[in-house]
Length: 236
Length: 236
DNA sequence: CGACTGATTGACGAGGTTCAATAAGTGTGG
DNA sequence: CCACACTTATTGAACCTCGTCAATCAGTCG
Image 1 (cartoon, rainbow over the protein chains, first blue to last red):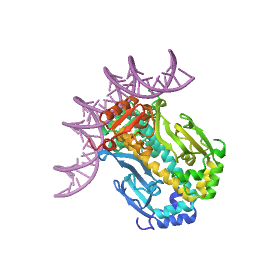
Image 2: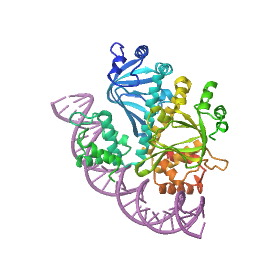
Image 3: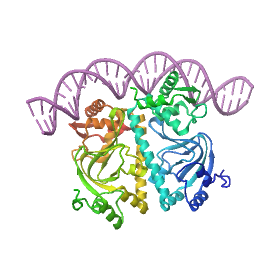
Image 4: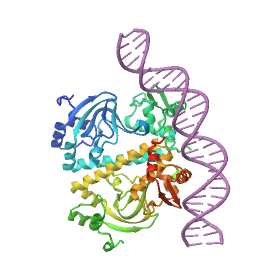
């Protein structure tokens, strides 16, 4: 896939799904496409590591990645996921800082690397693009602020319900209501910010109450509504 | 102060302290200055409220504001502070969303209101300015991500030490080592994400250990180093 | 001087973490 | 294809941090 002939074509890519790159000019697409470098990565591949200098951004053509920070005693805190159409790494490029997080593949992925020069010149010369990047960043900032409030104020039970719903909204379910992202219990714990055991206990409690069903890592979302009630803590 | 003649002059303002507006062209300054609207606000004035549409951004000429979200049962979660030279409200303008937080004055303030049209045309026409806004946003995003990790992983004790240090770095201390921002115990609790009583207990514990001293709302930072150790949880 | 808001302290209990032991998967190499 | 090693999941029990409730005190503003 390092061969550009086999690489995803940007124009195809961004008509297929929405992204910050949708609606560029032909010229911009040509630049984008010719500068990029695509690769296939298996589960557990690390794309970049917290603290390193990133030389460009990655655009996800296929697959799922987790973005996490490493906290006390090496414990992961998952900050976000990235999927088809998302870009990652641009925060560090724009703030001119080292990466504040690690990006790791959790579902085999095809990524296109776009050098920061290409990315930055696009920003400088195309104010629409620049605007949509800002839009994106500010939206993420709003979400981060909400998350801070949630973690600070909600119980673990409420946060687990919330995370299940977020995953539902982000990745959807198949025809059997199975969540279309597969995470270990530990990964779930690292999103919610709790111990693995707590996740296990509360998931099985949700199962007992028929809100969800469990089969190994498969999570069936049965009662979205009730999860929303739990998450919003309106029932208290 | 609604009278523009008495309003702070932008060029004076931004040579005095650093901000995203430093180093604009003369023309940009003229536009900025003529479009703006300045006012004096006493403690507890609300500048904008979570959920409302904002029609522009505010630049802080003097004073301190707290930016908070309202969570479960009306509880405040303080997300940030803004002081001299900072701008607030731009997140909502750029993401085209309603305000995700409330801004309230905690130390009497002079604010300049800059209509979103002025702000947006500045962004569109001045790529340096646009870049420095992005830079700012991405930095905030990085900080928000760190904060998520901290709240999720650190104990209350560690977080209080950390907050004291953040306040120290942001607002400094006077010659008597008194923190130059005055907060109620409840406000401190609403930064850390804990109960008022916990703040009180842990502050007096810190005092007992001679890390800080307390006189009403005045907090003396005596042992910055030890606070750092506690905050980083290296001592465990 | 009241009325109110903020600060402090103690007692108690619930929610969550940690530790330990065990079971269930998963993958690898011979 | 099985055996062994290793990771992941589950469950129970003990412990502990923190939040909640209640009562008291201090400071402040008309």
